[in-house]
Image (cartoon, rainbow, N blue to C red; front, side, top):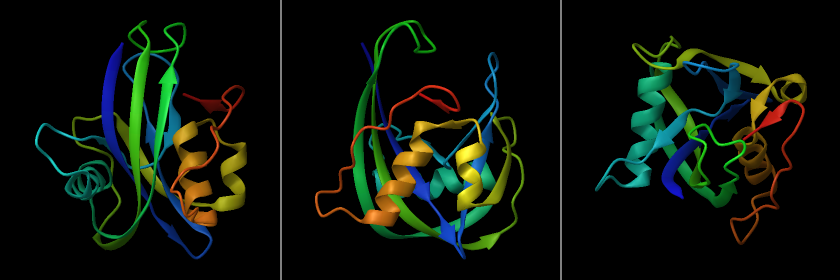
Length: 155
């Protein structure tokens, strides 16, 4: 089984959420939250700020920890063809500067502010739904129920 620790930014302003369009080398593009892998010896708090800057071109500050999600992606749907566990640390983040742009030499083709009601109609990572659920409910445990995948919602 492969394993990844990642940090994700949930940026919500005026009824909109900041989403990034991920275009993998193979497969279909989908919308996700800015964020990604926590590097060796890196604090997830620092990783989310770095990832927002790399993927969107924007400066950000963390406002609060929202929660942690752990999920196992079956080998039949995982990109590498082997079972994969992703542990995601979700933060509410506020954009403080910069300009939205594609990720240079990366897999994020664009980042856009999306009205929250429009998210349901997008092909997206389940991370988007998890992040929005955490931001909207602020569960005391920092945990929300697993989001079922299928249709527009991908692993």
